[in-house]
Image (cartoon, rainbow, N blue to C red; front, side, top):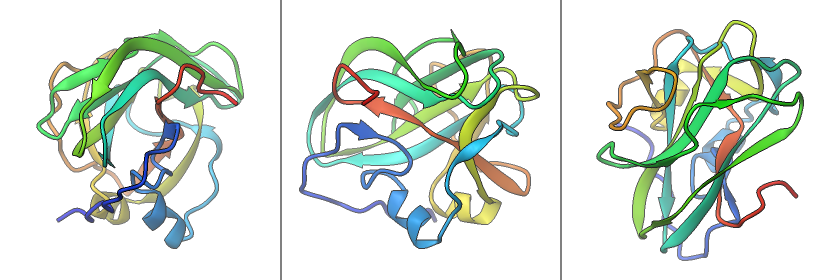
Length: 185
């Protein structure tokens, strides 16, 4: 059974990432996971990752983003899913463009009703040469946090089928959603 996400009555931050209080940030920090660094995606090409997060109140998502590493290749898609696996928004397949930057993509402004639990989705189409700011964690730890995966295509699927990630490690890139019109600061 995945670790329960904290319930909070405080407003969410302006960005929601796996490292946010709304997501799995507290257990990642408590377990002293490594600081994100530029590295190959290392997840199988076109393997979608899903990271749970919880909202205490209704918010509007304006953008999605991810942090490119020192080499860019292929396309990326970031989106949001309901707990039942229905895609609410995504960037669509978007080319990585500039090395070592936070790349943000406008999405249709989408209201996410709260309180509710959601999943952030991430997929990259070139796992052999694309790099991202990311960490790796033992598979069992990632599973205990509720991280799921799905064999995908060049963009996130319309419906997610949440499954346990395979392999020995979960490679978690820096990505997320912006609750304001500018993700980068």
